Length: 274
View 1 (tube, one colour):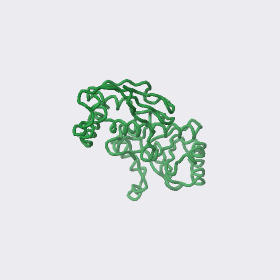
View 2 (view 1 turned 45 degrees about the vertical axis):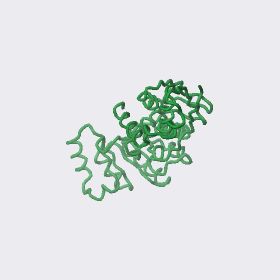
View 3 (view 1 turned 90 degrees about the horizontal axis):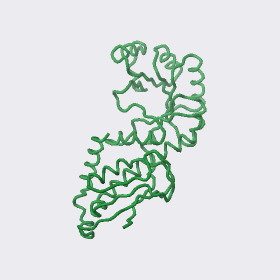
View 4 (view 1 turned 135 degrees about the vertical axis):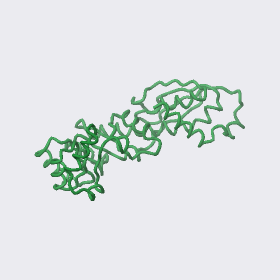
């Protein structure tokens, strides 16, 4: 992760023109040194402290964390401290907070979703991540107690609705996949009983039930459980309001796009101390 992290930080520094922070350089003396504390302004799960440490370490600042990624924090908690040249700290404040708040927001959302689900449900992410930030966002999902779905299009097979239009014989397709890539999982989205039968007969590893109504989910899961030990993944329409109902169906996986693409930032501030 470290090499990729440096690339992300480098891009952020360049994008924000950190070395040309005209306000800070006009107001803060070049010789000024000081310390700032990171404070939680709401309860949640912190994530991104390793990222923030790297941001400030690259600028020659000292960083000390009082919490660890994946730990629960409460409003008012001091979670970290950074010391060094004030110009360097203030010029990187926004980059650090943006990533820390964003990643903590993802970790917190996953944690809360797991608690709302109960039933020891396994919450998985998706590929609905921000370009360039997938590695960090999937790390945040794990910090919240979730699991990572495939990282990219090459990790495992996932036949979706649009693929079905080009499939005449699913068993033949699966056989070809097994022959060329014997170690890779094969997952197939099924929208009706006919597709479920084809997937089971073809010997796929996972059946994906996506964007189905509650009655159809219950019907299809009962049907699948009677016929095969194949794993079941539920996705689409997953929200806090219905996660417990979905978890009660006992699928092996529940995948949610919103935990990365729509998670709200956790409120964390940076305050001058001395």
